[in-house]
Image (cartoon, rainbow, N blue to C red; front, top):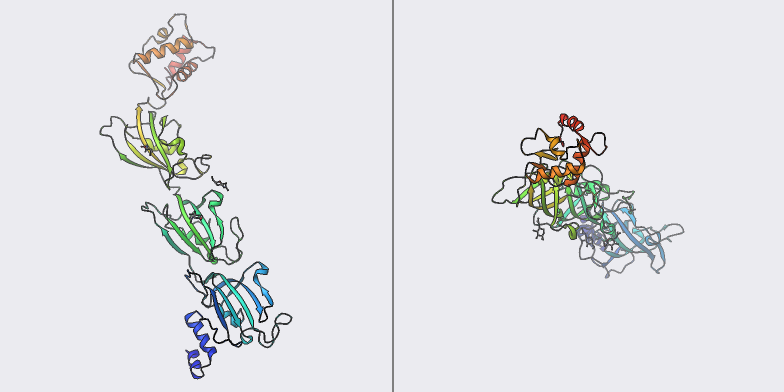
Length: 464
Ligand SMILES: *[C@@H]1O[C@H](CO)[C@@H](O)[C@H](O)[C@H]1NC(C)=O
Ligand SMILES: *[C@@H]1O[C@H](CO)[C@@H](O)[C@H](O)[C@H]1NC(C)=O
Ligand SMILES: *[C@@H]1O[C@H](CO)[C@@H](O)[C@H](O)[C@H]1NC(C)=O
């Protein structure tokens, strides 16, 4: 107000011009004045997008070339290959520059003409600026922030569904492009063909990212604007890059993956067959096919895995634990989706060339066949009573010794006649050979009645 009153009483152009600058934050071109005694500003280039303009108190980074009226250069930030970084309106600059920067957009270019009274006056700077010099600056604004700035987030693509968003302590994998305010790219995960993987909210990333990533969905595209006090600060040192000190960073992120170490396997049945005489139990032999995708929907190793059939025995460690858990209680003909967090899948290491480290896997599974297994731990069982003269029965030629061939023939005959049963899903010959070796205590390739009895009395699993 004091300013206005003063300007009113004696209305010469300077206060009026200053008033314009301060109030609107924008200077009209002042070509008409043409005096070397007033600050003159020409907006040579104003970008289409200008979300924010310089206000007094902001910190800015800009490039400039300073010349005298005769065109001779006296200083240039370009020669030092680094922006000039300073607070505006705090007397750190010559008065003319403090005023001239106000209202500027990032990427705006201004020609500024500063009279001596708003520059170095009648004294000048010894050896650099002669007395009473009018200074010309060609200014390009690169960066702007204020110590009161918070992290800003702007979602510019929202996926149709969002079952889950990033929370503190989640582990996430995301792609990003990092740019400065002027649009220059300084880093991109794409250039490394690898997502950036981290825990959230635990200080593994700069504070601005820890905050800006909260609430992001898979497939969402979000811009996170991080002021330097929540980013790399004055030092400007990133994970694998060196940034100019005090720079505002734009991160365009695309979330690929999210899980939490407390996540369990999730099962969602989307087709149930009309009848289901038995559901999968441990030791059952099953045949199923699946399509495997990542959370963002891309198929992994699609050439091989699309609808590929798998044959496994549940609970035998033939698949990752998450799959083993996800198949339980399934009916033949049922279709379900099983979501497996990495700690129950392929872990931090992943599978070379197929599954990135720490990836959540989504399997669409259809159960094709189920053969009931034997009780847990058994590889062969009798369906009825065991013959009291077992050894004599096996020892067909009655010579008191059973060879592997004799033994194998006998077991297969029991299976064929329905008297016995081998565990499904395993190589029968291997099972039979193991059974034989177990009985052949002294390892001489023959089982005697004595050896047979000893083993029989122990009555352990996997034995006759
Ligand atoms: C990223 O992958 C593309 C296509 O597979 C390949 O051309 C490029 O060389 C890879 N870049 C790096 C850094 O591995
Ligand atoms: C990053 O930049 C590349 C190349 O311009 C673009 O294809 C990609 O979508 C960008 N990613 C994000 C998350 O903005
Ligand atoms: C796997 O994908 C193929 C092709 O899209 C589809 O025909 C098949 O039904 C899918 N299988 C499962 C188990 O989802």
